[in-house]
Length: 327
Image 1 (cartoon, rainbow, N blue to C red):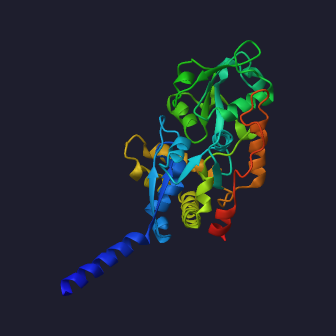
Image 2: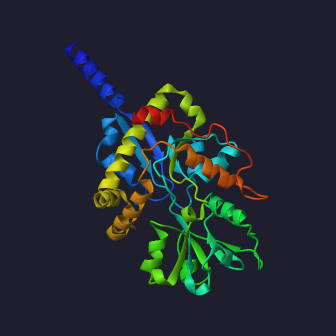
């Protein structure tokens, strides 16, 4: 009898401990790097644990589509760019933005100065490297805004489907390539070109920037109060991680390196990346700015005869999570 009671008591305690932390799976948009430092910092510093969360962070990669992962039930929440999320929503995947840690866009085109390109008008007749898998939407909207066809020709641009490297620019297969301020641009520099060899066009400066690296969940999931509560705690801890990363960029970069199981990242590159990422998250407390959302939607709708989205989205974002998480 005594043994039974002791065993039952122990089992109860174990079950209680197991239920203390709620599981949350986060799918990243890309591989483990400082682009996602806030989440790794929150994990490493125990911010998720403080919120009674057991968070699993799943890195992305060239063969991983975050929208497909969350659609298939492989994640509770995913990091995605808003153009891809809104395009997926229009096609039937009801993604909802619940938080927006990134305030600014890091996307740009980087061109060799020797090509003679000094303004967007000079793109005509040139070969431009573009990422696909949902990352092409901001570029296509920009070209539509400029009135430049993307089917080639003297008055258009030839689009080179760019892999996730900078080889087309280094090997002169393209006049310009897609880069991020915090990553590929510096890969070009590290490869031997200098800033004086290059001309860059930031989407922010061109007035066609769209929101990047927001947190998205499936709309139906938000109908579950327990899920909503987990997301409130998740966002609160994540934003704590992001602000810590902004204030301690070198430490944040080192934390990211600890979680990089591939060993592909270097300390110097991650520290430099985190310094640039901090510029993009600065000014955001995690709540989506409706004006930034409207700007993104207007850019995506302005796609000429083939816009990224064809109508104003409805229900594509909510403040329900951040209102509770940040107050």
